[in-house]
Length: 115
Length: 115
Image (tube, rainbow over all chains, first blue to last red; front, side, top):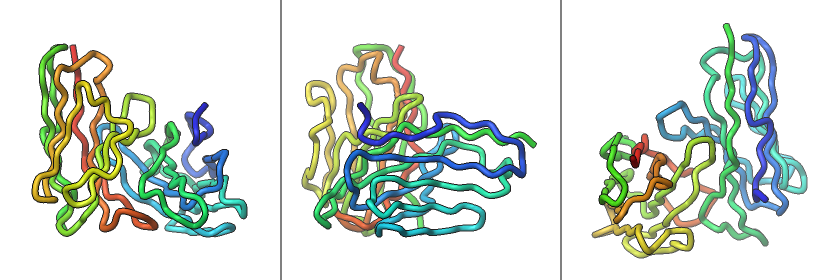
């Protein structure tokens, strides 16, 4: 089984709608990173969460990490065609307050936004 | 500042041939990563360098894959001989330090097709 599960695998929404992508780990994490990827391109960093209960926002994208540091959600408000792409969560599986220094990625969520 | 550079962007080879990819990380970044991303999956770490030393190569198929980072700057990843299942995007990333919480900066990737 995957160490990091993302859901849903794909999402099709109408422009202007809100949406949420989830990322779940079976272990407590040191940190959780969200990236966006356009087809055929590299990963673009969105946000990093490290503290339990932490929440960060950038423009219309909000990411949260639960208190146990095992689940994260990425929420997009009033989606736009520019939000389309593949969203990836990457986890630093370090425990006991120590970073592993490497990321384990979920399988990604493909987001399509129809105008 | 300049981002992570990779070349070539695309490569098509026949099975059993050899191929090499090049990566130039962000200036001053001590840590360099090579990931393999198969279509429909998240990136999987192949090897991590700290300066010119290997930190983690536990998921590198050492019978056919090799990587080096001479002088702690540029890096090359080689596959010899290639198999059909090696078709993927090979991503290079760099980070200022070996352990978090620091963002990994990704290059555009090299798309390899093995026929």
